[in-house]
Image (cartoon, rainbow, N blue to C red; front, top):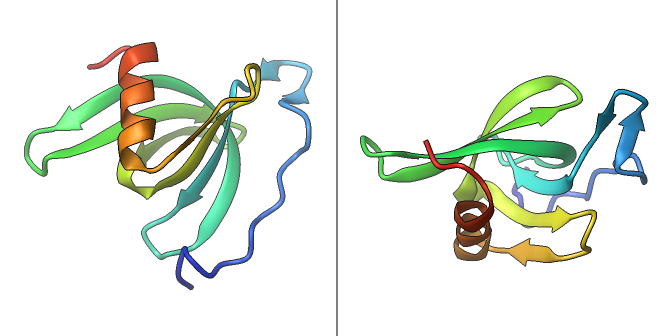
Length: 102
């Protein structure tokens, strides 16, 4: 299923999924199979892969740590501030400005 036509997934309406973890972001993401999902995440760091000239970021999710490609992000929503970042350039620049680069 293509990212552009997939049904939007639902996610817990609150940024506090359980009593142990508060998530800072809601991420709308298209995976390698073209499936669209919404996840709660905390970004740990940003990294550029010189071998493939792509930006990735590592994030804590309710399912554990995951790696995401910046070009697959549809929207990064900062739950605390309400700001939303759309598209690869806006997401990458926001992450570069606000998170550690490895």
